[in-house]
Image 1 (cartoon, helix red, strand yellow):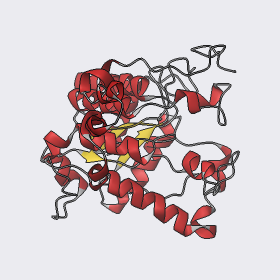
Image 2 (cartoon, helix red, strand yellow):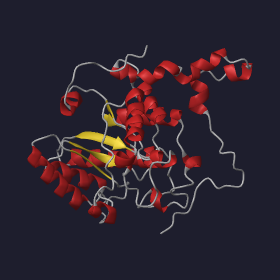
Image 3 (cartoon, rainbow, N blue to C red):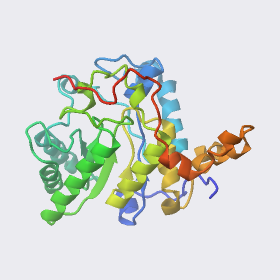
Length: 299
């Protein structure tokens, strides 16, 4: 399948989802721009939109070329109340936001920073989803704080809660680009590696292809990423779901499917890696013989 960019017709997000189309979100801004020298860790305020707008625009363009359909504004932690308490960990606050946004007469999508244990008041993911949909949200899901596997578990619980309540909504997931099976309820912020030592946990492009397929099979149709999700991760989603979408992203022009470009390598043992079976079954090493596989979260 040759790269074909994206269909030219402009459709609203609900129209796309109603037709069964996969909508691909964008990825990491705060952590990526911090690594590039445009954001200061700590309060994570987005002054880069004023001080370095070209850097923000460049990242948007990279996500777009990698296959993103949706570009979110880089406004996280842009208000005093958000700096005091990172919304949304409590479903009550998310419901308030939905009720206000419904007054705009536009589709409302809302994601929560929760894992399988639910929100900070122990409201389950299923009940969170029910309350959000009853408040008027058309799209519900989770973002940030947890890796792909954990986030999909949470979305599955949301889906089951909606089914039990006889409610329908489109599902959305935008997890971390890191593996976080050892997270506590607060997510990756409690890991001792946060935020400057997370690199050994970065998901491979093949991990993300698996995530994209599992999300799709679960019924999720808005699939993207959050902190740690680089443009090549978004490209992995777009490539995995190219059969369903009918085209590849522009960034696939320089990327052979499942390592197929390696078949021209000069070393025969590297050429042997130009196949899907090799990368799907690889257990990548960290190169750190004295480091543990998992960490103990701080409280």
